[in-house]
Length: 220
Image (spheres, rainbow, N blue to C red):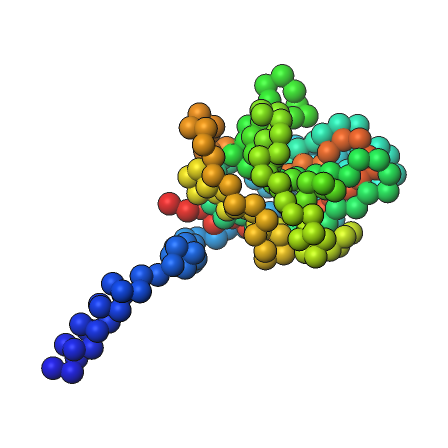
């Protein structure tokens, strides 16, 4: 009898106090398989200019230069496309002169008429754009900006920072060092919800970016 009463109480508690949406998402993510996109040793699974622009450096991917101005945008892309996922990585961005910018493309595609551009969402990196959501080579604008005071508190300049992109259906979230900076809902139903992931170094500056510990959890 006590067992039956306990079961009834447990069921009643779940009905009255259902799990929060964030908790459900976290529990679901824990059940999915997280895979390493970069093994820290090779460019296996990636495509780009690995001869001149992108290099392997102490278990990280580096792009750009602090000695020579980066001529234009360069992207290192995954060979596989992804739709719904949680992407986590660490980045470090340093600039000696000129334009300081990089970013992480997702749900993107390579431009047919340019080997130096991608089309799609970008989790942006750089002064005025840190951890914001930009639409690269499509709407060409910031879709969701960030609070400069919050960024000032969160960002570790010239050092390693934790970065996350959550993409589920038409909902996109970006996190910098564990704090949410973007909570965006796409209202254009014609925008693709699947595509490549790309690491960017932006042209126009003596700038270098490093990416490491890149993991993805595909969500169903």
